[in-house]
Image (cartoon, rainbow, N blue to C red):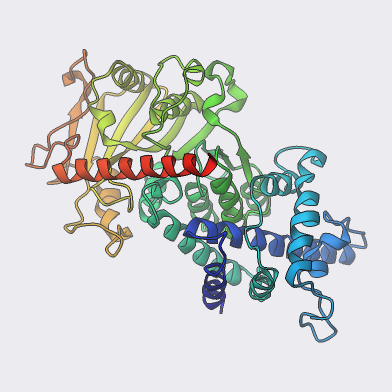
Amino acid sequence: MFEQAFRNVDDILRKEAGCSTELDYTEQTSWLLFLKYLDGLEHDKATEAELAGNKYSFILDAPYRWDSWAAPKGTDGKIDHHKALTGDDLRDFVDRQLFPYLHKFKERASGPNTIEYKIGEIFAQIKNRIHSGYNLRDIINHIDALNFRSQKERHELSFLYETKIKNMGNAGKNGGEYYTPRPLIRSIIQVVQPKIGESIYDGACGSAGFLCEAFDYLRAKPNLSAKDLKTLQESTFYGKEKKPLPYVIAIMNMILHGIEAPNIVRTNTLAENLSDIQDKDRVDVILANPPFGGHERKEVQQNFPIHTGETAFLFLQHFIKMLKAGGRAGIVIKNTFLSNGDNAAVSLRKLLLESCNLHTVLDCPSGTFQGAGVKTVVLFFEKGAPTRKVWYYQLDPGRTLGKTNPLNDDDLAEFIKLQKSFANSDKSWSVDVATIDKATFDLSAKNPNGGDEISHRSPQEIMDEIAALDAESAEVLQTIRGLL
């Protein structure tokens, strides 16, 4: 039922001139899902309060609640089409009354971690692109049929929503911005092994895949107490995201996974000066796939001791600073970081090796990130002691990865098993840091068992990256032309 409803909504959105891509479909589905979810949450809390003999104060005023404007019900529990707005009346109410009303919540909120603030932030960043009020009515009817009440329903909805995010990731060259393959994330979490009571952070959270998977990992632990569940809800997961669409999707994704008021802040993480980070700001665990290939302005670069325009290098400095002593991290980064000869890369490798124990490097094959033609590695490190030895694992699923043949959990099973003891194999080996060139701190290493050098890229991979960059340039030019 849920899957068919999502298909029906997408079919309607394809008719809309304002919705032309998977990104648009997911954005428009998200704000409607959010309001439907909020309505259910409010009614549940009102029922709980009534049973306890208390009165519940609704967040939304009556005219702006889902069951007032979107899905007023008759005595039979079905939508009352005499009361439900449609056509131009519905579109005008959404555009001229509902969105402005919800936008103002940010000003009224007591802080950024409240549901009120999330409401204001979400509806400040997106707009209704469904211009036909009749299409909007049809979509609302499908959304209203979805329920969030039971754990089973939420699990199914979260799975379908993750599929939509995956489709967004496959839709273009910037797929990694929205979607990191979940098998890769799960393997990173199993190596880092976060614990209940630890703070888990992603400063470039995108659609919050790392945080959602970490929540699922911890939520599945046996014999959780009420205190543990409260800790998971309120004081475990923290994220930051710069762009409006991923921010909205991150909020909705975490809600569907079971976190009522996600601690996600919309901000440019790199605009924060590293020297302002204090002990109280530091976290136990960092899981992230920061954007790479971007370029930050000079004034942003001044926030970091190692000046560089490469966003991934700035994020890595931020993550090292954000970790507590003894804190652990699993970070995805472009594989050229291991051998890049520019001053910033050399200085950053030196910083990483001297301030952290870089114990594991996972080399991912081309095709791991669908829609992005670059190779990546995952850096696993612990802050507080210098690196003595680095264990490398060269992931080779034995097939060409792609959209129809993606990475799966079985592909990573051997890596997880061997990593526990840093065992040597045909695909894994260790390098003593004492043997690394202290002028370059080059971390690339040739597999002594005959594998390729992990910093090496094939001609096809280089061509893929050139094609991806060309597509990005074309998209930017198209956007500029549209603004002129």
